[in-house]
Image (cartoon, rainbow over all chains, first blue to last red):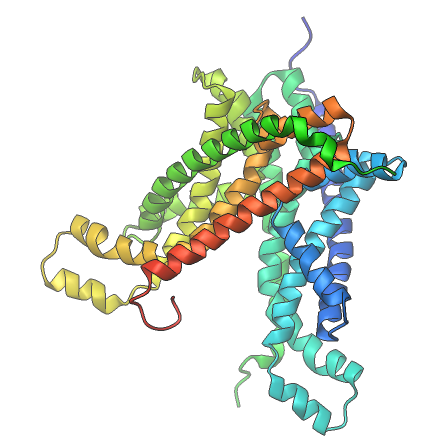
Length: 223
Length: 223
């Protein structure tokens, strides 16, 4: 009969798991944002072949379960390419790709939200393509895109919990370990859920602050 | 590097059996989620602040905690309080609870989009409250939200892959078995990904068609 009581090491384990979850979430968000925006730019510049290929890839990634993508990368890719992948590498690849697919959709609609007449005006004023993108399209598209991006990021935080299935010791895996040892599912899973909830709240709060800043230019300041 | 999808032909039966179980789980969960979503949406748009707060808390919790954590909470927690459900029952219950939160959001927006004049006309005509809900609010709110409800259902299908984590051999679970039988994980998971894409594509096509059909007499941007 083993000891089933809680010790302070359990809290350390949970916090370590939280660190892994938040770390992977941050890394895959940064990579996903860069990749997704890049894909959207391929469409903005109407790159032949690449633009439709990227649209197709995004559809595939959006309409299949992340768990299956994770299995495909973790179990399938090493066999196909005859290499080795650690669980963390597989998680990084899968989650970045998945985030990128959703960022792509948001970025495309954000870019399209900037009126066509603005592009024409910019051209009339003699701005180059890069200057138009950098000075006219990007600031307005960013303000438009932050709202949907908030929902996406809160969702992607929850998606990171799936990497526990391939053996990454994230918050969910730490919870599963504690669950087996302490045999107190209500306490353990409530604590795990609460930690995810708090981080999700934090993400939503920081995004809404960012949105206020990005929209500051269009706010009524009074005469 | 070898890629030989044809060698999976003898295992088609396993995939079909898994797909049937997935479809059954999703259909049951959809029914539960719809019933729950309607009740919660009515509570969230009710005049009573208590009902609004309770419903809001439910949606907040179930949207901000990862599904796999909810699933483990129910799977390990329910037997503790003497509720012995099998894995399949627990899975359907968890899917319905999580789906209910998202469904209620969609239906709520459908209710809020109702023209207040319609409700006032019903009240002035002396219709009892239940009749207003049953004959006026819900038919209009459900009809105009078929398409977003379809994407909630698509998400439900994608989420159902996580049920494989609690020993349910639905589509993903049976694919895991086939992958370990054949030693061809890449082919198996690639096929699985395409199967999910096809299923969700069909569902969203059907939802779109139903939406157009039910809203064919409605003018404007709803249809």
